[in-house]
Length: 201
Image (cartoon, rainbow, N blue to C red; front, side):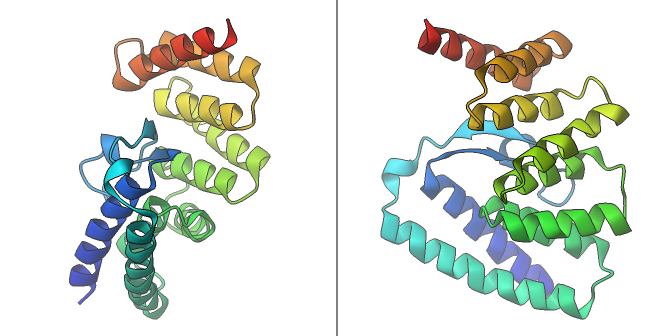
């Protein structure tokens, strides 16, 4: 039952992500499975023109209904580590950030406090839930475990960008390019810097 619900949510959340077409951090481009690994990527969906707002609303309603069933499964088995992380990821994917950050916090507190991938997603979910400074600080904690974690560094840059703090955005993007110049996220950082440079000139 849970497996079928999970498959439905994964399909729905993917459709919702493509339909929204907004700037946001998502794990989807750099992971092999939404349960195995969480990472952040700064992306703009290129498929937003294919979905109307009513389609998006319908997809969200369906996703929320299925998420509710999976939440019931977790409520019945609160010590299920895999289900906790899976549900957190799915809430994140449909941009229900307050729900996601609560479950990420539970995962970190109860199951694995040093999972840097979860720490990264927790930080951004916290940021999007209204605690912007807390989200940035939570992501910076990743750097105490891995000072050269490019995705954490990149996500910090993006959060400063969303705060319109250009100086800090540029500083963290340059740091990302410095630590991982040939990685995908390093290349994205370089592109982001070039775009900012054109905007500011």
